[in-house]
Image (cartoon, rainbow, N blue to C red; front, side, top):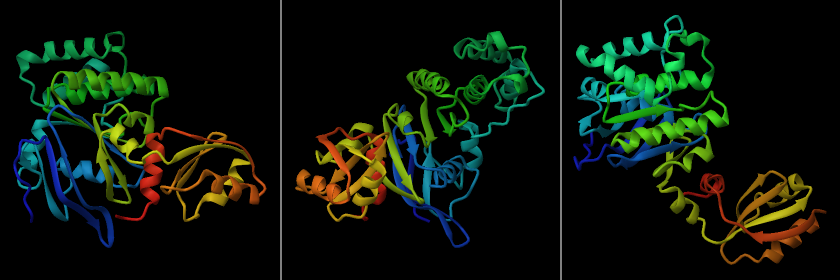
Amino acid sequence: MAQPIATGAAVEAVDLTRRFGDFIAVDAVNFRVEPGEVFGFLGPNGSGKTTTIRMLCGILPPTSGAATVLGLDIVRDAAHIKRQIGYMSQRFALYNDLTVAENLTFYARVYGVPRPEQASRIAAMMDRFDLRPASRTLVGALPGGLRQRVAFAAAALHQPAILFLDEPTAAVDPAARRGFWDMIYDVAAGGTTVFVTTHYMDEAEYCHRLAFMSRGRLIACDSPAAIRHSLGSDMVEVDCAPPSRALDRLVGQPWVRAATLMGARLHVVLQPGTSRDLLTATLREADVTVRSVEPALPSLEDAFVTLMTSPPA
């Protein structure tokens, strides 16, 4: 098995691969996470995000390749890694028949928080995540957003050097999701490295750097701004009617890198040097009314769609 070079990374993966029979869930991914980063792992459901995070947490062994977490080998040192990290899965195992305070007390003991420090740690988490009003409420009676705050507090209770958060906001509303990211930044400001998986493009903007996964492969890894700018200046927004017919007409054209429906308009990434007149003429030939074609700044969703549909380099 190949061994990653110990260079002080919080996480480092080298050709990390996981197969389930003939199915390749994670296909030779390589990335590095620096200490103190908020690192996003982005991709649709089934892209390999959860499988990767489970390997990094020592829950699932890789088929091949290697990785280190806090300088520890994920195979040889799996038990030690589990004591050094915090992990919040999509369905973090809170106990519905225990109160918020009782759940935090339970996890303080599970994570080995010294008994003399447990009360002060729990009190600090109650204040930090605004849990005191619900401290005596059964977790099973909490709304989704508040329940996720309790789960996050439990995962961070033992002050781990790195927190792995797997789809932490999947079951909460948009307002609660924004509040959850405020908590992530609060923890990161204290020096904790945060490795977070998500399939929400808007959340990816909050990360210092992020990796795009598609069908088990890593297709980009950089800052959100750098990934957006990688599309260059050849993106346009098309105001037309009907937009669905326009999309059908443009997909597959050799001079179109990607086309996405954004509300009632299209975002189209053109091959360099393509004339907008060609786009307009093509749509009008399909009986599409073109009202305007204007330059547009690419979003992360534009970048992701383009990277997914572009042929490998």
